[in-house]
Length: 366
Ligand code: PMP
Image (cartoon, rainbow, N blue to C red; front, side):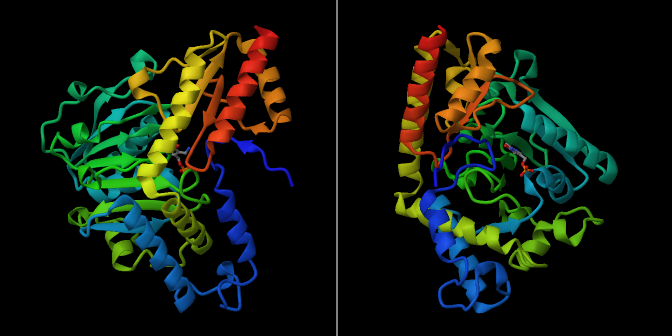
């Protein structure tokens, strides 16, 4: 077996020890007589799995008691519609656009608002500046009667991260955040948010599972025509099990949460993620063959886009990288260039191997 260093933006690398444990438990989980995929979601064995997963996630994120943890389906993309369906309540919501994902979120919210009533406003868009930084605090001005303020706190494609959550909360309206590509990468105060959500396939587990954490007081204001499956309150009242949940995804997520605790929790992950990202950005800044054009204060610790001196070398760079065991470095097609996604499961050695390779490639082609 030869596992590569996998820089995929998602579905992304998982901790090897998690995959090994899942392999060990594939045929039989903990004396249950069957594997996790084969057990009833309402039986004692799976109930213990989902309860432990939720508790570990609550411990990691220090989730306050009045916040509900939901294990849903449909990906972060479904949340783009589900959020206005649940929270708009005929009023208006404000959106911050700082990259491709928040732009998609606002488009879907506009579609929903025109169907169910309510209004979507643009708080600010940084698109005219080429999506090179997160929005500055003073660029967002709200009236205070908005149902919520939506942000994407890590733009996976553009490599832009928000580091000042209290500034978002200071507007005094519930902040709703797409944290798909950096949830669990560092500690933060959940009280700064009314709702956070994340597709699982980067820092949590397999795709098909979506985690939503929502303040209880925001439940119960859904659009009257909302499908039951999409109503946060219905899902919260039913322990995320109105129907059969994505059981295997929840199980793997639970193993990842346990692994994160063993690593020392989110403060330890933050230290490691900082070390990995600053090594890579320092390398890129110090080598004229490569460049990253994101404002240093907004550079994502999870997704590091970069370009070579000449785009014509991209193909050779990717082919040689694959041959060196460094996989999935191609940037998103909408922006081109390269992107190294270095989520929690990417070890420092992977980043070091990448920098070594980049250095060699630059010497050969510089
Ligand atoms: N938001 C962000 C920040 C993402 O990175 C992604 C996926 N790359 C999505 C939303 C969409 O997620 P999903 O595929 O789970 O719908």
